[in-house]
Image 1: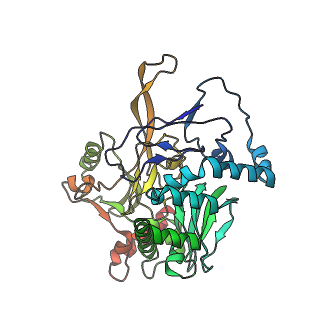
Image 2: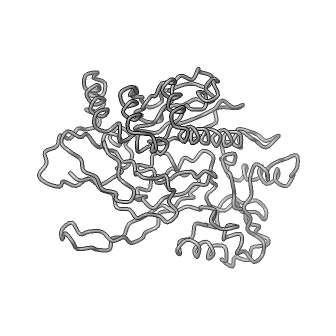
Length: 422
């Protein structure tokens, strides 16, 4: 059998991305996204259990006989210890080493140490809603996500705050091991999750033997700590429940238009389209107050619901926390559906594919890809605000703009936005 996913390489793709994770015992090489599934390989179980869109196309290379299993039967089989052990043993034997190497963090680890880990790691299955560890627990292990999504949250006055959603191939649990302190957050499975658990002593040995890995882990821990501190910084004197309900605390940036200055000249929309191959990321609609409009444009949320469930991990957060969608997006529309604010749109584009009915013949096929505002991070200033001839468009930091003790106009605007949207 042959598993393949059409894609093209993005010129700004991060260098560390070498594999596209799919729902199979092998990942797809980024430069050549095609792989072979062999006799005995189990594939499709992740999306069967989670009901997320398929992550790749699978085509029979020759005559094949397969056993198809519906979700209810797979769930029953998973609860059988003998069946589960056989699946885990097969995964450990055939795929674990490849998956460990495919994790960017472990890409430079030697083959002998990967083999050492392969024999010692624990494989864990977690059902939806199960808490993996709680804030305040002792740190005893480091985790890599094999299948599914994990929610990271922290206790906060007025309720729990979601810090992030971690997809397949992400890791977590490193911060308490590095600081020798209790867990700083709660990690919970939001769907069926399979984990690779690395015990604390093996994690520390990994850090000692591979300084470059230790550096990456430390940098990630620092970035997460900085991000968490920023997220927990709330404007003073605000109603926390209302601020949370409207998602304004989740926004890193809002596009605000001053309607008294705006002449509806379309310069902002045209500039956005010119910067993004003719596809604008800006819709001039949204919450309104007096002369202000909070436009429908990506907020770069601290709790990005759009990232939950992407079957190929094409939507991700950059180190500077902007949300970007990579070129290997398969157009499943899940991120657009998940965005609570309508800030992701599906855009049609043409790609050249081989005609399966006429091998060797290429044909143009129209597909869709998700698009969202990327803040024009390769430019000095977002195109929409730079092009506005009347100084009507501004990107603002809501936590600074709504600092009530310093900005009373921000207080009035916030309260009005909350009232108008209820």
